[in-house]
Image (cartoon, rainbow, N blue to C red; front, side):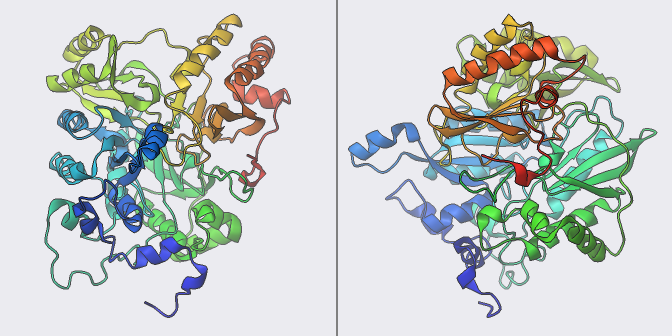
Length: 565
């Protein structure tokens, strides 16, 4: 070990990464251990770089303890999908694996990725091999590296969508870990003698201090929540051509209850880069974070804290020095929303259908046979499948003559939804209980029923169809980006939530804490007069998040450090 590294002041995970032999750890031994359904504690950290999280069924926790059984261990597998576009064949693979190797559902994430839940240890390897046979993989879907690169999957309204998707894939490939450990462990590839020298030219042996996220948006739709990303790229289209990108840095949604030095933060626009420069610019931002990020305190290790600790002026100077040139001045753009636009849309003679997927969970329930419907659509071979940053799905690249076949199939299985409220259409929920080990409260399983009750309040005051962004998470780690919502609910304990108000409809402003530790009854009683006041006093075209600030209900948050839990 290098004598220049003072391990006494670094987090335990820093040593673990360094000693992992480039993300191998003892994963092979853990997978072969027949005594337990878990893997070794150190391997639980290393496995994240391979796209895997160990979890347990927390609904069964007390009963298992009574029976003196180990927890009901299983694993989440996250699939890397830069830009969010999958083929019909890939959809069918994921659908099949969810039935044969997981819990028979698919989760569409807020980073445009697939997740499988409930995979047992003995099926991990065969699941990952099945994913790779479909030309997808799971490497770097988690861990202290750049994760899935987001990009708007919706081409309508833009002539440069194809270029944006290409750049998302290029960024993802360029920032991918180079270690062959993934292929050795999961795909049975043999280690080449001497192949471990300088195996990570970008990341080094310790990788990044924390996770790193990149997203690309095409105005006027901020459907990838650019200001929540470590690096956000705002595409600037001029005369039908891609001129370049406004570069945003320092976004991040996670925080920790009880620590006011942790907070969500919206990114800063630094300037403009041409398409030829953007790969270079993003790499240099990653390197600044690699070299300067906090490796002592993981709760303050994201790029947002690096920028706030050193100062934005320092960061810009450092970036320009590493680039050898300066970014141009930012160019004009306008965002109007950060949610999805549902139904049929046309672009260059091809059609796209955006379907609402509540909580991003693809499953069959009663008469709503969503999983079956999408399987049957995939079998038709008439479209691709585009995952959105709002957990929804776009059936894309459809010939005009095939629109009716797609519509008829969806209608046959009862999944055409035409009377959803504006609130439900703009909702996001993280997984939370029963599987996420970090969750204090429900989110995905609970938000739909809470929305049903809020919809009654909306109907009373004539707001049923008005679009309001609502997001719920089971903890403050920010996976569902609740801190950008007009109505944000963050789980504090089972059945209790902090209520935040005032986020921007287009995702450019944080919300602010309004009430703490509310029960469902208290949430409804708190929202009732606010929604009534909004209906009666709003100005023409005024969004709910803007109204609560103008009306003095909450103060506008201008810096992340002002945010309180």
